[in-house]
Every structure is written in C-alpha cells, then in structure tokens.
Length: 119
Image (cartoon, rainbow, N blue to C red; front, side, top):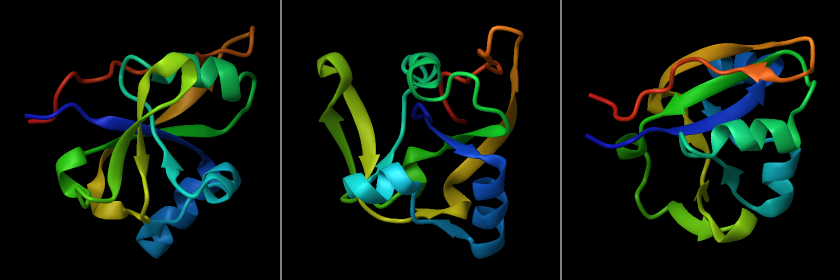
C-alpha cells in the first residue's frame, strides 16, 4: 500500500480533465514545468497559502503506483519539505477519488477525511 498524493484544481479544470482523460497542468504548473501535488500532511497548508477564499475547488486523490515512476519526483520546496512533482501529464486513471471543497465563512476550505494509504 502506498500513500496517495493530492492535486487541487478548479471545478472547470476537473471537468476538462474528465473529458480529455489527461491533465497537463494549471497555469502555475505549466510555468514551473511540472504538476504540483501535496501529501496528506501538506495539503491543508497548500490550500491556506495558495487557495484561501478561492471557490469551486476539487481535491483529487492520486494513486502514485498509477504514475510513471520516472516522471514523479520528490523535490524540496516550501521550508525544505519534499513535495511530489509530476513531469508528465496526469492520466485520469490515476485519480482514485475526488472531493468538492467547501468554503467556511473565513475563506478556509473544509477537507474531507484523507486516507493514509490506498488499498
């Protein structure tokens, strides 16, 4: 069993991803040259730092074993933490679950219960 990684995107991006079968990345991803992900421990801070008060977001759980191992790299980023970065399009078949993220009155997103491992 492996821990999933998480991708945050808009509902419009999620709809386009479902229709095309792959996701090449958001504007930030394309500018940086890879698709940004967070681990279970990092996703709340990522939401607070980069998506506070942004409506209509979806959180994708991604099965690491479904990705090309050479394209997924764990690289130091915020505070020296290792973040997963995908240097290839994300295939739809790698998404094991998705959740719409609700906003509270302070502009913070309510996270669903995140699994520690995928079966």
